[in-house]
Length: 363
Length: 247
Image (tube, rainbow over all chains, first blue to last red; front, side, top):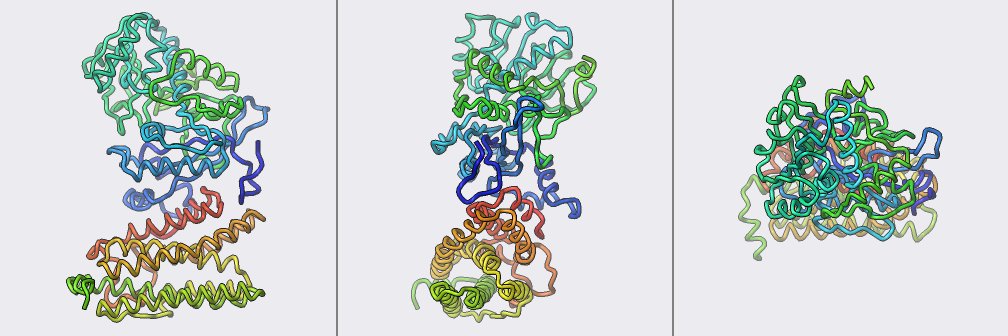
């Protein structure tokens, strides 16, 4: 561990990399604004749109993570691909695919041994079969994301005095890598599992594998199931919020694990409860040198997909643990959960855009 | 008159004027490059290095001559003005580093910063120009690309020897030179007239030939950042420098 890459000295070699993108122009503005410094005026969105698409994928932050407060930290990097929110909204172009490829190249150049692919980068890398060299393992990070979503659902039920076996739980995006992993982990544990996805055939195939374990209902119409569900996991790859929180049942608990977020939340006074799913927290802390990207109302929190790379690095397992294509089994979810907790990770206290749940603070 | 001249003759006067202004920038930039390489001869004690600098200067002179010929074929008279405000600012900065006997700063200015702008502009023009002019711009762009590799290797070694010192020097040179180059492509100019456009600023008319200021600026900064990546400069550092450039 450590050492140097050819031509690069005086920097600890990062052992893991997290490759991602921002979900909104305001997040991008925050990064660029931080880099411009307080002395310079903030750029307008028009100016950002002129500049940002041209930025090659690159390291924008260096971080260290540790399993415990006094444990030796390992070094990592965050690489932003600078795929813009506008580019997420349309069919991927050659340019966007190249950005994912260049993000992976940036991780290789820095000498990382394992890289997690966050947000759309994992979908693109998987769909386009983007290769990497033999020294870098790529993981989608979806196994840990799924594990954290399931634990989050359990936690939300517990905090609100609800019992999962009395709930109708809807998974929106049920045929995706994370959605299908959640379905396999939760089937039989709820009164009914409601599965929604766009592709009827794939949805039925997924449901057929689950029906022997519990009640399962499917639909390609989200709105049809949304009112029936008392619990919702939203984990689609929609480029922008696509489902109105107010369309959910009045007592619904919603785990929004989309990136970008899936739910449109018009009011903070809704009777529905929302938390951001798939978020972990590291006991040893996450020390960053930039302080701009991915800031949350909880200290040392990060997306599960990003933490998965760090966990693999901390445990010396430089492997493509999560390879996409709906292959995540409950056993693998459990295995990753054990690995992660052994590295000092726990479920982050439940929070949404307004802050940490009051029940978490009270507990 | 050959076929390409026929194609050139189909240009409107306004389009011809845009290409004329672009050629004025290209010729002046190449002559500045020639002068820069020639000035670097005294920074190197060994004859082989001195010869390389002179060859590079001759190559830049050759580029400027080919652009002049292209201008003649187009039927325009380019403005060649080494005292044009932006270029003079860059040239003055360069000579200060020559006087300070600093070949690394000179390489950064000429081979990384100026070449990034030249390479990206030449290829962008090649993509929209009529056949003959496109061929000239593309060929010269490719030649600029080829001789940058050696400089990248030299700079990589220098960074490897002392990252902090190298990145510190690079940041200073970036602030001196890239801010001027970026301003040449920015919406607003700090000078009244660039000294090379025949009439009003060409930046507002680039769309007449299928170019636009923001894309040229973006391509140049993309090329610049990629070159710094190849050298091994920390991505977050180079990004923070570029983020502060005039827009």
